[in-house]
Image (cartoon, rainbow, N blue to C red; front, side):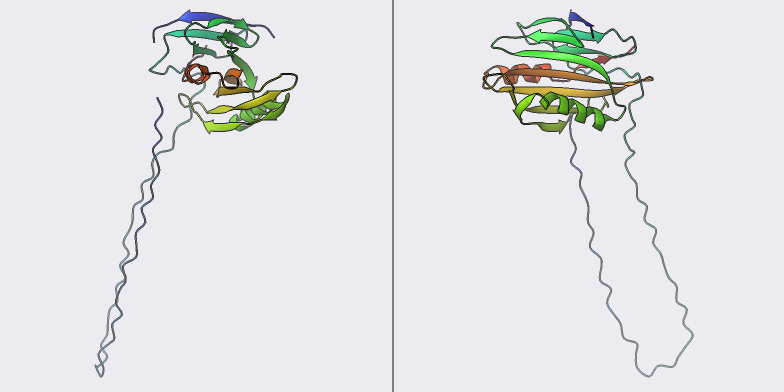
Length: 224
């Protein structure tokens, strides 16, 4: 499947709030004994019920289909990856200084020093994010003899997403590689798409972490 990518140069954060729970202790009520030898008198008993109002935080609304994504902070050099599907989103991803960029099947490909490279792919996927993420991870490790995968939630502009990282021992290669990926599930009015930003390098490459942080950082999503 042939895809086109357009390289562009443009001059262009997520906080997690810990949940807390407040626990209140009950207040003991002392028992009283009625006085002895008192004449019985009619007694009126009134039950009092105190109403408690509970306010819940409103649930986050899902991102409507077709909503663009433009993070406030963007790298100065970026590549625009797109495919021939007119309904598909575009991904505009940061490029490390000195790296080359070109069109590639499914989106775009970046080439860096010391054996480092990266891809940006856009493809139709399951409408369920969990299914899309699992399929991507299975495909990533399919042709490896040994693999490690760590996954973290990484939503982007309200779209469901994950960060993946680990080590792959690919069949037919003399050494292991380390990788990082950022995958984002983008539903549209028609079908859903998975944008995958992937970067890899030979294990132990000194400049890998810095390059991977930039490439897999927040990126712009443009929809038709």
